[in-house]
Amino acid sequence: MAKESMKAREVKRAKMVAKYAEKRAALKKIVNTGDPVEAFEAAQKLQRIPKNANPIRLHNRCKLTGRPKGYMRQFGISRIQFREMASSGLIPGVKKSSW
Image 1 (cartoon, one colour):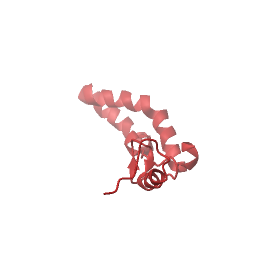
Image 2: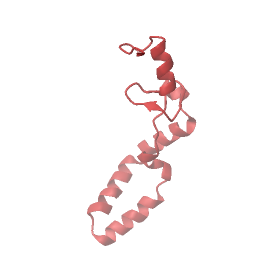
Image 3: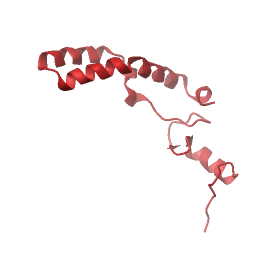
Image 4: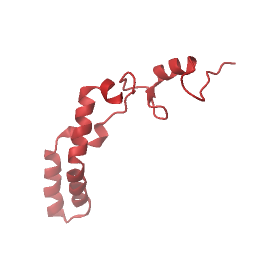
């Protein structure tokens, strides 16, 4: 269900991150620990990897609507869906409070 509502570009990014993960990690290790000449060459190679292969570009999205903002990590849904589901009693152990 999560894959269906997720935006196509997010799916594409996730695949690209997985594809380049090992290569990025190896190059980053060389950049951080290697001698200056090797580090420079590794940094050049690292820059040739596509931008979307960087895991920082992935964004959490609501499993129901695909909304990228207002994501509640504990439930995996957006704040809007959370409120609707909590009000209608669809989330176990969550009750709308009012005082």
